[in-house]
Length: 273
Image (cartoon, rainbow, N blue to C red; front, side, top):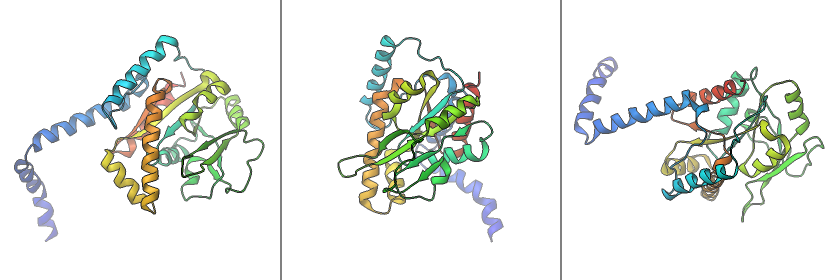
């Protein structure tokens, strides 16, 4: 019976669309959203800043005011020296591992992934983003001299991470762009270390709040862990709002995984010039 079922599916779906209220309007809106995403992806390098409507509506005003005030004090700050260093910040579940795995597989000839060490136990996806877990009890080697702490909160002591500035300098000498994952608390430190070579990226998953919560509950072992991560996601979003003027580009992790790759490869190509 399956061939007959498949044959009638198109007609059945059209009938349902006609029966459901606002179905045509919803379909048109979905097409327009996808069209906008496609235009943004194709032209991501043209956008100096992206105001995100993610949590509370008044946060959009705060982002706009932050951008305006920044350029009153810091005109003409968009010039970059090549080869650039991309620093990506993102909340839990936004797609950092997916992005870095893609670059590792398809983009290694274009960009170097900077090795990163963490004082924590190994996870299954560590290999995807250059991560080297050394355990909580071990010390970083001396060459891993750029160090910071992440996930620190009232009920969590945080995890220490580090990258090697000598590795970054070697990539610069080889005239190759490079990328690593950090957090927005390291932006000013990055500027002091590498100046106008730094390109700061925020990775944002285009999920609703309900979808985000469902994702965390599905991917965390306990309810407590899920709630902690949800709280961290809101904290990272607040950091983005407060530091929006320092973020050079926003990668949108949409429904289509390929969108993420396309945006990053377009930025790599853009900063070659």
